[in-house]
Image (cartoon, rainbow, N blue to C red):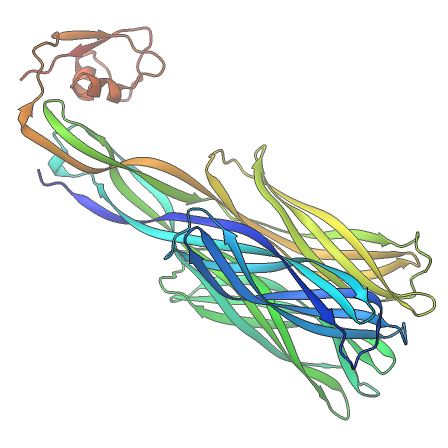
Length: 512
């Protein structure tokens, strides 16, 4: 019997894996800088330059770039800076990983710590969260609905699934020249914070068009003055992605991996040439439909059937929202008051992503560090950890699922509420898609031995069967080597009618 088989390509394995690393390093104060009096802030960005998958593990390598702000022992009103680059290599044990799996990675510095050893030495550390998208494509031959098996009892089904057709690391640079107020003398850059707001990603002719803006906060000194400057830079980036079409679903994440600059100064104003390295990933999914035979048997002859458990994945709608997280930093228990606010760094410590009580919940903490001057113009720091939570109604009950989520900070601000309070606000954007995975039994092979009829001499001509709540007409027909149609005919059942649990079925013996 020549049967109709179809080869389908399904992503047999893909997951979003989260892991974290602590990157610690000792830092020596350069000879040109004063001794440490007080650490004000430790900012850091992480750039992953290589990711490799081995048997049961994945290895990340790259650089963590620290910018350390402190006040020196000679003048507590001035901010001193130290830049420090730490190469790293991190191995995460992930059972089930195999060489050849495709992957892309994003990373996020979620926390920094420091410890002053002495006036010329300190230890810094960064908590780095890695999110790894892994996929492995496979092919399966499935038996399709066809004329050759019309006289053989079988059932088929249409299966819908979302297949990941591409998951690629995306790297690009945002370049801009920033011009700010005229400076009276030589100025120096103390710190630069850059937050990304990706407003749109569209698929056009196998390319991903990425649009957004960078929110830039510059902290600089001009002689004895410490100043801040805020601006925004819009950008459009085009990335090649094979097989990407306008019908694809896109899931993405981007973050700042590095910031470099070249100061410029003219007679009238000051500025700098800024380069922001952006890295992240884009996962593209396409919706597919295939028909396959889910079960088949022969009531008259011996047969051989092969089945395979095929994992079919489907994506929920993408949940999106934007909200402003507000909090207040109270320093009333300190021995100083707030005279002026200079700068704020913050880190997003992402927490759980889970389905619970019909809700999709994303949570985490924002950790804010604020630099301010007290009434004697001494530089001080204030810290506040603010929990956040986003919730979406989500009616998904499948036990096997994972959540592709992204919570990012796109803007921030602060004002002095009083001499003992700083009011902070952070605009956050949350997106999430739930990937549900179900295993289906698919017929991948079937053959009939026409020379081996099933013996029926010892079977009665009629079997009386008493169905219960678990009875299924298909399974009853298979058990007694007959067909659903014959049982329906003898019992005067309509094809669409359900079995009556208080009425026995007559199961006929098939004739040779």
